[in-house]
Image (cartoon, rainbow, N blue to C red):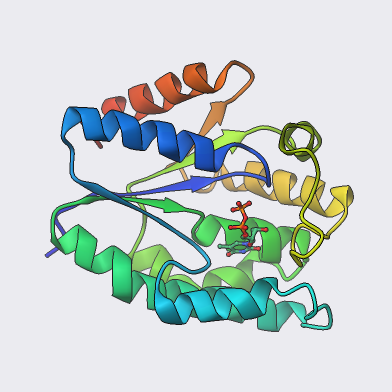
Length: 208
Ligand code: TYD
């Protein structure tokens, strides 16, 4: 029986997910709300091994289907190892990226199609659906400038700006289909964005 709530953060590279998750954690610490922070791909020993293969800059010949299946494989291992036990413990689970990353990156930007990506992730979408997904809405050109460029050893970050523009458009296309995804505008300071996220979590009954 699942008792905790499951929330995920999504956005383009450099959109500020890590900063926002840190600010939310500080708020939850002060409020005394039990939670865990985890991330995809990775987050548990087997899933971290898969992460290394997926993101290794040397694996440039990996085909798109293999990439999508490895992300899905890492996802299910991480669900079983980390997410489900924490939810059963009644904790709030905060996950940095989840199935919507696969839909935007592999489904749209790689061009595999969201039907294919939904099919290999159907169990995650049906049985382990997040209660809420926070999408940090900032286009990749603005986000990259904030992050001071890409990591040259990271296979995904090595993709050009046009790839990341397609990722962004992919995210926007998910919004009408998945009402659990809430876009948070991040034009203001990181503290203003954090306040918006906390208000959103309160308004959706995720935290009190
Ligand atoms: P990471 O270093 O964690 O990036 P970020 O800090 O931007 O989250 O690397 C994760 C990379 O994997 C990132 O480029 C997004 C990509 N990704 C997918 O393409 N599909 C997925 O399903 C997931 C979870 C991540």
